[in-house]
Image (tube, rainbow, N blue to C red; front, top):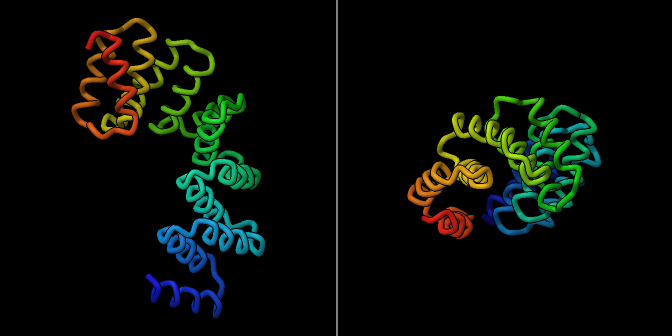
Amino acid sequence: MKTAEQDLRRAYEIDKTAEVTRLLSALLERSGRIDDARQLALDWLAHSPGDIQTRRELAVMLQRNGRAEQAAEQYEALLTQKPGDFAALNNLAWIRHEAKDERALDLARRAYQAAPGNAFVIDTYGWILFKTEHVTPEPQRLLKEALLINPANPDIRFHLATVLAAAGDKQQARSLLRALLSRHPNYQDAAEARDLLGRLGG
């Protein structure tokens, strides 16, 4: 790792480019130096603010490492340059949703309008719609569509099961939860899924 970093730093000092910046930033992240990775990317973006790919990778890296507000800043900056970027809209919507920010629903809706066939976008919109407005018909439709597109995704399955349970469709919710726990025993929200299944009668 040290040799790789030294080589990349030499390349960066000789010829600062977006590609070398992203490679070095990724290497710093892998070694746990998140602040250094962030600062390197920020220094580059101060010089090249229109570099959308580097800004996107920075935002994703920050979100992945629990730096939600720092990530949000970069997604917002990206959206000023590319307002219809569905990935940035979707990820920012999720950050806002987790912070209980009412702007989340509008962001999720805009992402869905920009990419209505993307399972992750549909899932985000359907789930935030359910959690925000506490309605079930439209979130059900959206999450069923997302599951058809990506049946292997455990988050979509869990979200749909939760919405179906709220709508009173216990049988289908149980079926989804059993399949989820069987296929993904180490799922990050497995405890919540097991709790919901228990409340639905197993």
